Length: 67
Image (cartoon, rainbow, N blue to C red; front, side, top):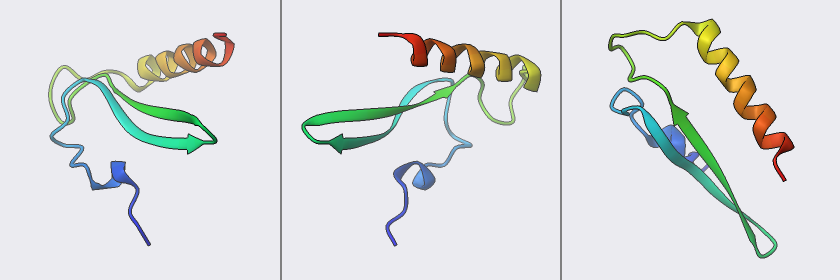
């Protein structure tokens, strides 16, 4: 079975930023999935789980409601 591309990335080396996780074709359209990194792994300052969870919900709501 072919590995998902994001599973081949060493996530310990990723710096904060927006990364393209995958691109899928649906008909003639391309659906792009992004990976949003808010902090670098195992480095200070640490972001609280509750804070990042709130940001996930804000982002998801924006993406669902944006036309």
